[in-house]
Length: 187
Image (cartoon, rainbow, N blue to C red; front, side):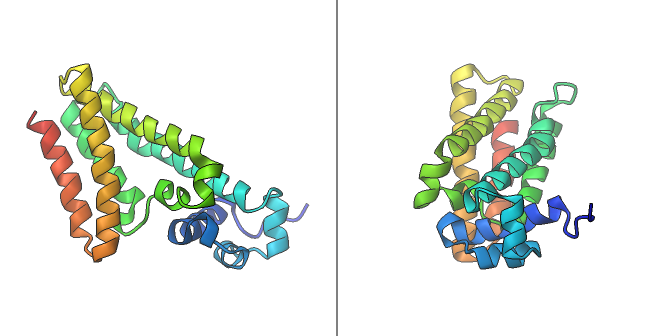
């Protein structure tokens, strides 16, 4: 068996980059191929169901990354809430490259993408809300307030990514994360 020339993680990084920047409809096989370093035939060999399977792999990859990095900190009961929140927000900075990267949920929720990935996007957003609700409970918020704050956090993160990209000002994303931290700490 021939060794793989391109590692799976590198393929996922390349696919992620294209889907984040072009969305599902806008991502061409040529761009996906170039971003992964694979010829189109090799790309189809790995992803026999084509572009949909590629986008699905990206969603799964990023979902696992978020669980292993962001949620792991936010849900760690052995650490005090302020540090959990600070560490989780730090990982969110990494996930979005300090506000320079588009959220995959946004990128795949346009046009045909929303029809294909609606359940995954909805489930992913619910996981974010559930996790931030838990950190709210760790800050002694009641159930209702913790859930409302968690939903607002998701809105603020997603909104700040759009505004950051639109205005070309990464300080917007950074200020949003800092404000999220202050809102929990000052509760």
